[in-house]
Picture 1 (cartoon, rainbow, N blue to C red):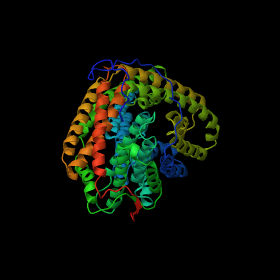
Picture 2 (tube, rainbow, N blue to C red):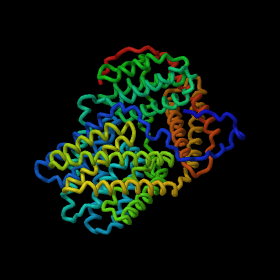
Picture 3 (spheres, helix red, strand yellow):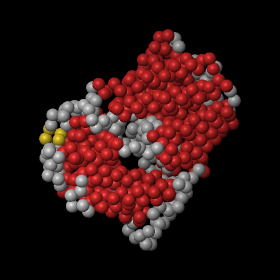
Picture 4 (cartoon, rainbow, N blue to C red):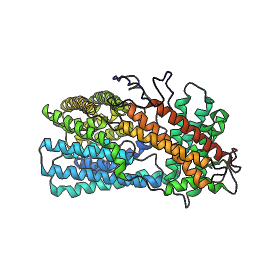
Length: 570
């Protein structure tokens, strides 16, 4: 994961690198990627969660209530990469968060119709949702769906007496979405952790494929360590005891084999790694890489890490403050600008601004371009399908379901491509309450998109993340401490697995966090120059120590490198 060292250092090893000039680049912003391996899972889940409530409301002639059921149904988009025990908790948290945001929005809407107040409340809700989603690492689609739901609810006429029934509809749909998200566990209960392990093996095989000497080796190694760290985090979310413990332990050994390959890519044959990864894709037996009386010692590090308490939420919220302030300011200003232009739905501008904010300013700029391109293409698609939607409520519901599927199927290729389907779906949802004139909808959406993107990005430029450099310093210190601790453990001729495993795992996590922190800070435009040479040295020494720890682990007699299929069922 280390960066390539500068070819001509400008000073001593501790001196900062020269400040780089920033520019608004369009290179690669709209380039299509390969689709996610599980693109069909959120796509099918969204349809399965949205269809029954909407079709039921269609049969009852109450499509005007679909906004509330959609609020709960869209929770099915979350947590598809998490093991099912962790997924159950995450989905429950998302549903509760959605209900909390909708409750605040509905109460506000029932107490006032002042548009400025509504926009202000919507901006504050968006900031809270952004901070909580980032701090808890809830994953895609993050805060955007929650902000879309709560912002739309703010501008629906409401009375206090109606709120309990409307929240009940959202809660019922949210419970159904939870069941939809958990349903695959009945067929393939270990699918997420098998998939994460396979990704780690494939990433390690890609690193070993060039024998550690190719031009792209640094990037391949970074991707490999990131995939391995993700696999460990996934496995640590699986119970260490009970019926699933055997599968988890077998997968942990495979992740260790990926770590060994990353530690010594020149001495690793990538084909066994790829073969193990292929074996994990299905529902067959899990390949096993070792046997012996002491194999339980391998898992002591994972068990120790599982027992460790996570950082308190308050500490995790700290780094999210700059982005939360950007979100609050940008959403509020975007909504106010929309009101000043006389747009009837300022929450579209608010949501556009909320969707922009990423880990740093460079990524925020890229998302702004993607959002504008996708939304403008989406309104053209809406213009084409609006006549079909106006044929009746049934075609309207079916078109929304098709667009819902298309959005989730395409968004992993690039955000703008998914927005091509999201935009007409959002416009069609407004038709649930009654017929809307397409021309005015298109005009308002285009104006709100441009206003939201422009004002939102200017707010991001204005609110600088001055703490980025401090976070890099803290990440450097943490990586150095983890390396020194691991080196002390390795100094023992026969280190105990209870000491070596947690030290090795902590060092890998510290190096992964250092690279992510540096990448995020490098994308900020106004800030002090990063200590690039110190980062390179810390990563190089850290990876050498990590490689030594992995080799020491792999050298144990009971960890031979031959693979055989054990009777460990998914």
